[in-house]
Image 1 (cartoon, rainbow, N blue to C red):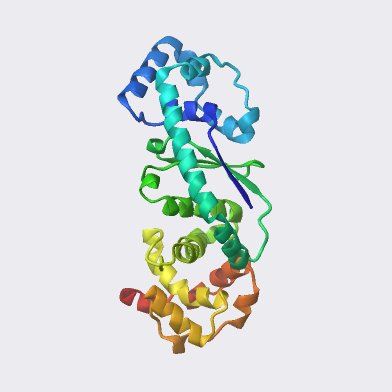
Image 2 (cartoon, one colour):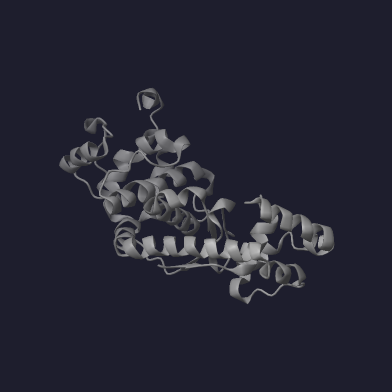
Length: 278
């Protein structure tokens, strides 16, 4: 899997125009453009989809507003800040990508041939989006909290990539699939790369579901009974081992097989009587 972090001027300009303003100067610029070019402004409303489809090959039908924005000091400043943010993300990815790629290979158990382009926008735009069926695997990325913890930012990027890769598989069980991706990326890979258990991290509303899946997730990773105890101690997530027969077939399936197992057996996995104790 190849991951590239880039800044696309058209996409950055579009986000500045149609997302909440990140500064007073940007708001004033938008007001000037609306006053002088309202028709062109309205026609641009859905061009982000075209930019995501074509990226570097995108050619606007009318580049009047884009040309205006590109020459403003406001845009030049935002682009400079965005490129600094891009270099920050890229540096963290480059530092940890060898370990991340090795963990993905071990835990996914299928090859990811796609190349992902992370289209970085200003972090204050607080925007993440992608087109599900786009041949170009492009993800718009700009999150306020990223600069607080670079590794955690990369884990969030990786979660989004794997979610993109899995797509609508078992789409009627979206929460189950999201919880499994959380276990894979936010919990296990983050733990391996950071050197500290990160099983308290993840989507809050899926916390109880992850705890119910956790014993089977350990079996998927190949843990025997003795190793289950070691993992429980590492992650501080105890469960009654005697109530969980080892599912040896899980250690030989891939992530799609694990998703199928969890979805097909959820009435046994989700023990409603135990939720209040988790």
